[in-house]
Image (cartoon, rainbow, N blue to C red; front, side, top):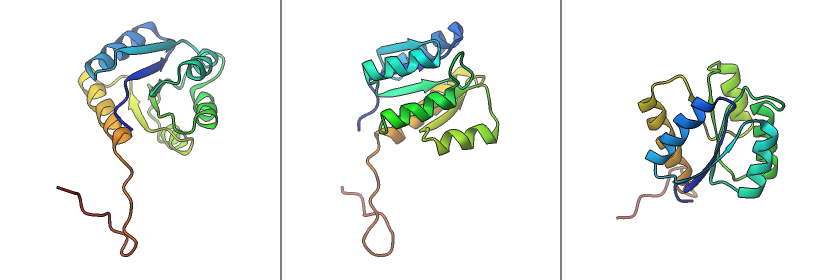
Length: 143
């Protein structure tokens, strides 16, 4: 899968939407949909089929972890990155269990958010590493 070309941002804070939209533009993503709550997020994800979803945890109506679980049930291959101010290990672990591709703290400096999202996008775009039949080692890279 190539790096994402479009994205859905789910956050109920307008200043965060603006920040993330600007960062995504720096990462080459021009098409960005926005959702202010979990219900709208599920609808827009089903209609638009974004390459990646940036999802807050604290949302009105349906919380982010519930949205994550439903997104992964409906669209198992859709990468979802949690972008939240909740930095607890318990929340991080639960998001990973539910299938989150990454976790970014929204109160980090803009340059750090840009770096973290870029790294997750690279991971999303990387082909899966196949293990060799014996020894469990990855096959050598082709030149």
